[in-house]
Image (cartoon, rainbow, N blue to C red; front, side, top):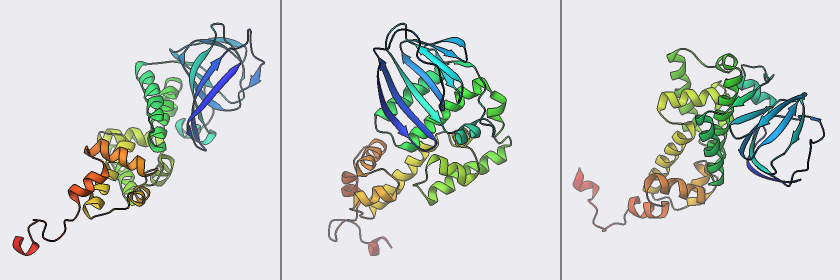
Length: 283
């Protein structure tokens, strides 16, 4: 069997891979215990799973929830298939499930919202989105899937009162303003909330996701620096938490309609005698 695996996101607590399985053997694979907790989301094709002796059909309309230690076998009666694999650490799984990493058994049937979130995660990863955005999307998708299995446990860590939610949003905004290099997990730790719940509360409070808000904040700061005459775009990208200068250029161009170089010419300080109004004349 030929398996091609392309990493879309790779972190200590969260990873996402694009997996293509071609030329599978006939019959069932050898029974083995699952080594990780993961979500297997079929995008094309169909295969069968035998999980702790119970047969299941795994197709694009469902999510297979892989539980650590369960005995699993697979068969591919229709040939090759294509799927996305989302793996969470035990700690991150516990955060999503109210502090207990034990995942309840069951097959989750995909809602249109889940299906779109899944494809958007893959598309944005292929399009070069940064790890913060991809982590936010992946955690939100995992939360949606686990909510279908254990809604009460997933909801247990979510602040109930409006005042508490507002405080969390404000704390997250303050933490981002102080350090734009924070990752999603670090931000969650800084404000004392799981990344999943923080993302939901932040969107409800501001009307946009954390990654989008963070980019808006970074673009605003970049414009100010360009107005002040900053010429070192690589340094600016590093200071504002972009992965590199190209990432800065893409985000600023998309948000402001012009690349940083053009904006610097448009906004930057003008030399004396260039036709600007002198400060003494405005006084």
